[in-house]
Length: 170
Image (cartoon, rainbow, N blue to C red; front, side, top):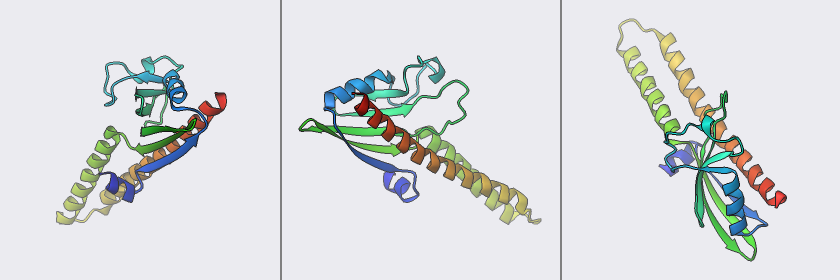
């Protein structure tokens, strides 16, 4: 699945070297992360999380799974999931972070794609060819793809800046 997502531009990897040891980085990440399960399905909504937390997810000694939390009245619902591995060598930390869309985003994209394929089939089977509906579904499908792709790029940029800020604040 990751190779398919990488081929269509919805999977990215960030390798970063930080001037902080692994334990301090994990402590700093815990300060901005609200502990939830890794499936991001919980009874507590993002808007109910205290405002000091920027991310929600799980962090352990060797890695993390995070997602940027959604704020109240936030219209950007395309926040990707960050899965990272942390290694430590000579007071320098190396983080390899995989950035992918969330399961809900992939599910909604598949539903939109199925709707698009059904629209093509219905248009081709109809005696009266109505291409307005087909054009509309093409536009929706392409917009969903580019929205997800932009969310991955923006998420990578924001998370890299967050890690650099954590190190500088150190």
